[in-house]
Picture 1 (cartoon, rainbow, N blue to C red):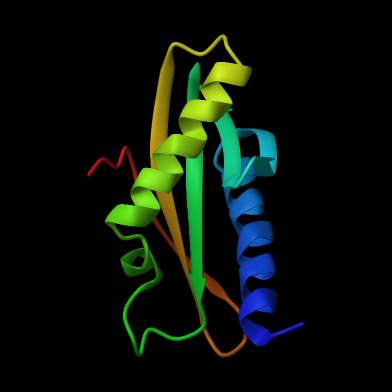
Picture 2: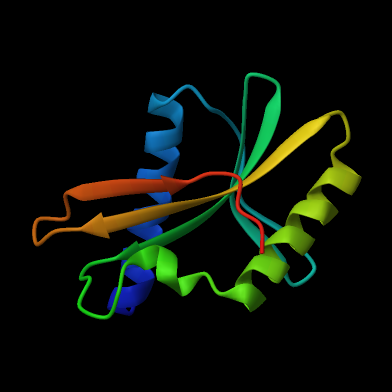
Amino acid sequence: MARHNETGKLGEQLARNWAENNGYIIRNQNWRYGHWELDLVASKTGRLHFFEVKTRRTNRFGYPEKLVDRNKLRYFISAGTAYIRINRGFKWVQYDILSISLDEQDHPTFFLIEDVYF
C-alpha cells in the first residue's frame, strides 16, 4: 500500500476515535453511494454531522484542510444530500472538515472546521 493510502487509513481511524471521544455517535464510516463517499457520518445532540477527513504527515505544502477546494465541497455536499434522502429522520445536518496533522511519531493534532459552506 502506498504511504499516502496508509496515511489516509490512519487518519480515518484517528477521526473515528476523536469523534467517539468527543461525544459523537458513529453512524457510518466510508459510506458510499454511487461515486460519492462520506468519510465519517456521526450524530450528536440531535444533529447529523458529515465529516470530510484530511490527513497529512507534513505541512510543508499547506495544512490538510487546504485540500478541500470548491469542487471537493460540492462533491461532499452532494454525498450528504444522497445520505439524507436514504436515511431520513434528521432535521438538522452539518458539514464539517476534520483536519489531522501527524508528527514524526504519528501523534495527531486535530483541527475541526464546523458547518462549512461555499
